[in-house]
Amino acid sequence: MPLAVDIGGAAGPPLTSEGLGDRFIRIAEVLQVMRKHPPSQGVPTAPDAEQSDDCMILHQQNIQSYRIEGEVAWASHSEILRVFDEWKGQGTHNRPYLHSEVFAPVKVVLAEWDDPIRAALVWGPVYPWQNKLGLLRPGQPLWRAYASVAVLNSKYGQAYYRAFLKSNPPKATKPHGLKAAAVNQIPIARRGHAPAELDRVAELAHQMMALHEAAEECLPRLRGMLRRVNGYSLSFEQLYRDSFEKQFQAVQRRLDDELRRLLGLGETEEQELLELLRLPKSESLQTEMFEPWDMLPPLPPTPPVRILLDEDRSPVEVGGEDVNGKQAEIREALKLLRYWEEIVNSRPPRELETRAVSEAATA
Image 1 (cartoon, rainbow, N blue to C red):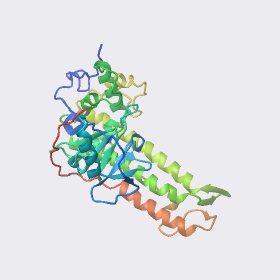
Image 2: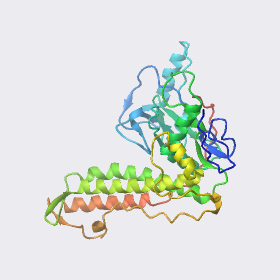
Image 3: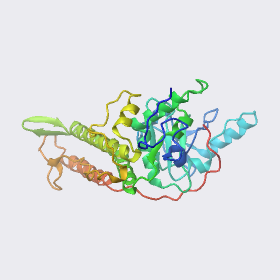
């Protein structure tokens, strides 16, 4: 029996692949999700871009929730196409990602492993190597791309995905990996949502992305630096690693709350949905909400992310005693942290002009 989670209120349709109807905005409406192929033979790569048509090669381990991580290589897209032209003469039906797809102004990359789903928003040219690519459809606002990434990386997106696979099992176990048909059906918002609800989800998704970038750049700069507090020598790197982790958790809690509202999930619906993953319900949800969503009071303002520790907020002095003679280096590192804190708390771009993609999506 298919899972029936009513995400549209008492009169809404059940959650099945046939039941969502037009009441919800789904991934397929926002993104054109496709999976194409890497070349059959190796192409020359470099650690950095060297030519105007170079693109970043993304393997599965590079694609993590909200971010690209690890070492990546760059390759010429024209060289990739050349290999495919040679391969075509041998009768292959495999197709490469086209220039308009690789160099689209904004993209969502999805790792092929689906437990959990991992998605990241990228701006530069990328070539997913045996992974999926989602392109923002013409006319879709950029903030829906942010919301799509937020839902895909959330417990709700994972649960919706499992629900659709349960109600519509794949006919064959191969090819294994992320099923585009199920991804396309994941709702990102209820229709008629308030613009402010989408805005807040987009802003929080931006905060998650920027926090990951900040941690990746800043924490290595703090390695080997010590602070003496109350007679103890403390690692700057560990202090700020803990600070980042607290901010990640705080932003994720707020994002879960905002996603619930954007999707229109009441307590009963949320509990039934999350039973698929055996996850607890949202901590902030204490009683079932029966009011129409447009009548609910707004959530409290989102507090700013605070990466810098309180003792390091002075622009002149660094908190604690300098232990190992690196006060100047610490000041420079704290300037970088302050810069990233401003980036994290800035608003993401709201609009982006996109053009139609030349080929239809393929799973």
